[in-house]
Length: 207
Ligand SMILES: C[S@@+](CC[C@H](N)C(=O)[O-])C[C@H]1O[C@@H](n2cnc3c(N)ncnc32)[C@H](O)[C@@H]1O
Image 1 (spheres, helix red, strand yellow):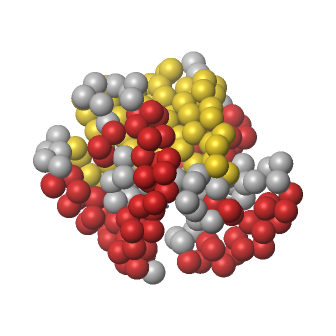
Image 2: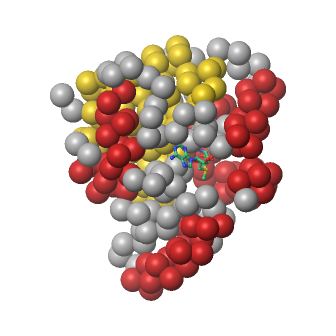
């Protein structure tokens, strides 16, 4: 299944990338600098949007099929300065308080335990370091859509590598001790209604 997902992922997301996600990724990454790690980098959708102010970039992707595509994209872009790792969000390859930013783009929906993942991000960030996030979430405020998300989620998770439709990721980020500095809530365009509600923004590690 993960082979199939990696084979179709870029095609499947092409229209929504063009319609909004590419612009959102560019805006999200624009002000990052220093040492940055991206978790669940997939096939490298964010790669073109890292600014030159990022001096060290580690792209983590645990799925071997996705990682092969990621490597190919980095090679094609001549991104020789980028390090690629097979690490998952449960154990990031970074020393405590060593990173200026961690990027999560459409990945906190798939991790087995959001709080454990967010605690791991806290561990590797410097005090005041940034979590840049772009995630699809539960359709709070739209009861009928939320009902459909709940109905479809058990099958959806099986087909999409554990992607959950009803996660309350904003509350999880706050509960993990981050201070949300900026957040936008907007519908992802050119995707099925159950994956449209999204949040994106910057949260900071306090202390
Ligand atoms: C929907 S894709 C998003 C890819 C890319 N970040 C993007 O914006 O298009 C989710 C990615 O998260 C990865 N993933 C799933 N579980 C993970 C985990 N526990 N830790 C890190 N990455 C994970 C998957 O292998 C997949 O590549």
